[in-house]
Structures are given as C-alpha cells and as structure tokens.
Image (cartoon, rainbow, N blue to C red; front, side, top):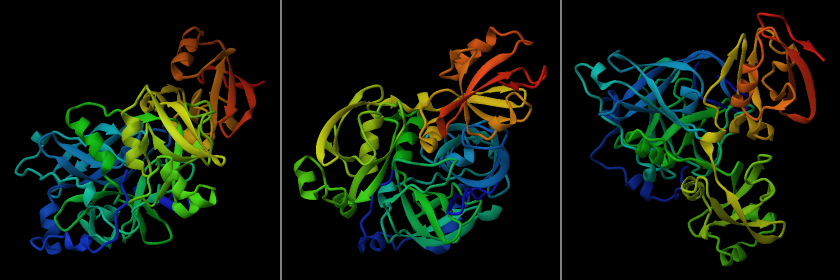
Length: 462
C-alpha cells in the first residue's frame, strides 16, 4: 500500500554500519548453495493474513498479506514487521508451506522500530516441526549477497536476490503515518513488492542478517531493518518479559563527518572532547524535539551528540543500549551546540508510557492517548486525547480528519484518556459535554464544541 510518492512499507493490504571489504563474500561458506535455499527455509517461512479492525494511532482498518518467519520453534515465536501487526485491534492467521493454518497471537510490537513478534501453538502443527531461522546481525556487511525469501504479492516462497549496499541509511520517511526513527536502515536493490514485509534477508548459510521493512515506489530500492535491537528484544520475549525501552522524546539522524564540519564541528576537536571517529562514518544529530518532553529546553535541533554518560556515541546501536538501560533515570549528554560544547542531564522516559494501549469507542468515534508517533510527525506535545476517527457525529465534521486532539472537557484538562473517562463517568447520558479541541499541527488555535452521545443528538459548534 502506497503511503506517499517516495517510499512505502511493503504490506499488501539498530543496525551497525558494516565495512565494504572483500570479507563479505569470503565469509559465505562453500558448503552451502543458493540452489537449496528454498528447501532449507520452506518450513520456516509463514504467509500472514492480516485483518485490522479499526483506526488506531498510525494505522487504519483493512486487510492484506505479509510475511513472517519462525525464530523459536519450541515456543512458536514468529518475527515480522510492526506495520504487519499494527498497534490496534487486529486478527492474524499464519499459513505454512503445506497450507497448515495457525492463529497468530500478537505478542509484542516495538513502539518505534518496525518489528513485532507473534506466537502460535506448536501443537497445532502436525507432521512437521519448522526450523528456527538464526538471527545474525553481525553478519550484515556491505557487499554481502543475500536472498529475500517471502510471500511477494501473496505468492508463497518467492525468492529475490540482491546485495547489501548502504549500511548506515537514515530511517525512510513514510509521510504522515508510521515512521521509524533512531535507527540505521540498510539499503539494497531487489524486486520485492507488497506482501514481502516481514521477510527474512538471509545469507547463503540460511541465517537472517536483516528484516525486510519497506521500499521505494519508483525504483528497486528496498529498506532493511538491522537486527541488533530485534535480538535485544527477542531475549526478553523468550522469557515472556517486556524489553525495557526508553526515550528522551527526541528524534536523531545520522550525518557524515563532512556534514558535521559544515555545522562548524571540527572532527579532531570532537575526538578531544570524547567523541569517536574510528570505524564510524559520522555523528548523530538532533533532528526533532517533541515539545514539553524530557529533551525540550535542554537539547536543540542541530545539536551533534559527542558522548552519553562519558561513552563516545557515533552510531544508533550505542545510543539505544544506553538509553534503554536508563529508563526513569538521567543520562549525561555532551553535545556540540551553537559553536560550543555543552553537557546536559536528560531524563529517560519509559517509552511505553507514551505509547497508547487502549481506546474508547464512543458511537462512531475512536479516542485514545496521544502517541509518540503522532507527536513526532506534528511536532506536538504528547498530551491530550487523540480523535482517531469519528463517523457518527460525536464531534463536528471538520474535526474528523485524524489531526485533532481533545485538550479539555467541561473546562477540565484531559492530558490522557483515563482523565477523560473520569469526566465522562460523571456526565449523564443525555447531558452535553463541552470539549476543547486543537489541531495538533496548529496548537495556537483552539475550538470549543458541545458534544453529545451520538445516539442522543448531533453536536453543535459554539
């Protein structure tokens, strides 16, 4: 499904930069052959039929096909993309190579990165036991020949060939919907299209070196998610635990050394201040700051990260490891800002606390907490109750365009859905509610409307 005219997630319906050297091909073992790749992986690849029930956060209702693959056969754990599972209510069915169907229970999706885990009941499989595909992020190198094995255009076990190219690409921009951030992506050229989302990118040994995530509408470029943070989360999922995830409510991007110099940073001076340039292709720079978040007022757009807690930072995996290990604690960032070096203490917030996990369905309206994803796109605070959709007149027509947030009800602030529910609990069914609504792309102006339960009367603008 096309998101915009530039790049799209490939659904029908933090990697570390590698080094471009001869060892990439030399590491491919001569004891394996591409001619047998289908036979070796056929039991491990799953065709996923997706059905999303309603609007929620960045996703809309619909159905489609995608791919997943077994990473733990004993527990029945399947890896796929976040945009395949979706953050809202949904139903997924997995189909193995022999047409055995299993129910896929959503297990975990990352709040930011484009990966998710499902579970199925291994007892439902009769006559065969799939082999888990090993996750090997360290084997992803520029120049590595690969095969992308999945269900391209809903055709099972389609195989596409290619070669890993750019290892430190910034996350692709999918427009106003879901966007990954604070991670590298790997760029490669292959012929995969819709339905290949969630496909493993494997080397000749049959090991996964990356996860297929998206592609370009106008070329053969595909965007592959490195496996470093997937492996991190997988260790927790196997123990039936939730992996700690932190955020400073800031979006970073990777810039080259040359770009850093254009911002006034002398690379040699950066090393003296505790930065790292050896085996690194650049620096991380602040690209967006969410208003009223932990980084607001301390970091600025354009700040270049030198170190965190004294550790040199030049790549996303290094940053993610420190941030995820410091949830609800402060980290010390040294940055190059406005021509000088400075140090700031920034609180790391629990990322799940700014990820909506419940909704209120009121007539044709769906309401939930403001999310990190929506706030990052609109440069708006993570505050208020987001109006995901309204098809039955809970609010006037002009507030039904997926851009509006409820900031107050009956004169009382509504920072989240729980507070709004408490207010609604004290309102009789036939009693109107006065809502203060703001467009998250234009917070300077607000509208006040009188809302009633859709079955009672249509709301009237004030």
